[in-house]
Length: 249
Length: 317
Ligand SMILES: Cc1cc2nc3c(=O)[nH]c(=O)nc-3n(C[C@H](O)[C@H](O)[C@H](O)COP(=O)(O)OP(=O)(O)OC[C@H]3O[C@@H](n4cnc5c(N)ncnc54)[C@H](O)[C@@H]3O)c2cc1C
Ligand SMILES: Nc1ncnc2c1ncn2[C@@H]1O[C@H](COP(=O)(O)O)[C@@H](O)[C@H]1O
Image (cartoon, rainbow over all chains, first blue to last red; front, side, top):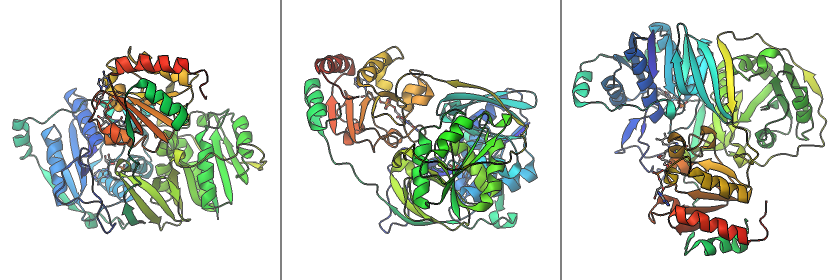
């Protein structure tokens, strides 16, 4: 099997983001960037499947500006075999990302596409499902466990009610939850080796897909702040406040 | 053109958040229809027709819809979408799984997880785990919108009598097979709609200790929440997770015990009316959003809390 894994470069999850004064977006200059966290789980799972002898090749793909290559290098350092960088300069929407991925799938013919369940910048939670619709492939979203079978996967999905198990025939799309596995760290020798692995560069305009935004971001602003609370001295005071001041118990 | 709401249900009853989604959808346009897809879901269809905000119900009933598989649902909704300007659903795991498939079929760029309807094409939505709010305007002719249910009040659930029309079922998608669903049943209120939520974090140290949280929750008639760390450590099941990648809750009272208050956790609870934090680290970020903070060891504080609650002769439920 061949597994394609989509990885996105986002502001690191530990960064307290800042909003631009003109309300046009979020400050990204000189801000620490990382791989979108569940995309690390997607790579890890693909590499594990390869290590178990059930996949022949793991290809990482990212769509983004020049620096998104760092995200690919990291994927290569933890075990992906090669990378594909589709260059775009502006932020693009999940629909456009899924159309680009569809083109790459047509060309690469993977059996599986693994991705994160949600990008932690736009919090859209759309791209995997959209790609799956465009390809008319089965989808297993929010995966927390994957069992690879002959020509199918048995996937446990995290849903609001608890857990759901489905079986999907390959070719298929899986979107990964953080609980799927424990992503490994790249060792220094592997980081060095990754520098020699190939990355193919493609310009989005060569793929012939319309990636123009459909949704205008009119304004980005701070959410309303909560007013500062107080510290109580002890449990008795807490209960008294909840009862008589907040009147919630 | 009218707005189409996708109802979430379990074939017998509507899921509670369908009422919140109906409110949001009716704010986009009062000409609101709803579609319900399931198997033997006549009772749920009837309940849907009783929501006064809904003018017409489309019901699609076939065996392969029993388990709500998105691959089966999406083509049906895509087909009826020609008559509608907006398709709306809750941004919970049901809607998150389904709506992007419909949007892709319609070549529409979905707007996820809105918290406010500004106009028919302009919406407010949180980004970056709720650390920024974006006002977005969609220019697609078919607008696919998921709504954050806790940001809209539930609509009235009785008094209406919309006509129910049967719509045609689609083919079964054979490459996805449902195997099983493990639902955690409990008599406690649902996390998403509970008036009080008591949540535990890594500070609880074990699944056994989590019983302390259960006791407080039962005393207060509350739902139980958890941080991702507590779920990852196996103290409690995933359906309790609150946060950016879990559930969003907006109770009257949220009690966070042994939770540090990472932004990903705050994303799921910081709109709560009253927040209480019990943590032994006075610098924990959770205190920055807490109305009442108690700096204490939880293993001492919880038994005292129970004692004080027991002294009260009335507890609102
Ligand atoms: C992409 C991404 C998504 C995420 N999504 C979520 C999400 O949806 N929800 C979520 O919760 N997290 C999420 N996280 C994880 C989040 O970043 C934090 O790691 C997590 O919330 C920490 O959980 P915690 O507060 O229980 O644990 P910790 O941060 O370890 O805090 C434990 C707290 O308990 C206190 N404590 C310990 N012992 C005691 C005691 N005896 N008495 C009193 N206090 C005590 C400590 O002082 C500490 O403040 C996500 C992370 C990422 C990267
Ligand atoms: N620009 C991108 N490049 C590569 N993968 C992406 C990109 N955008 C989204 N994805 C993938 O789609 C997933 C879900 O993103 P989203 O739908 O934006 O929440 C991410 O976790 C990635 O795996």
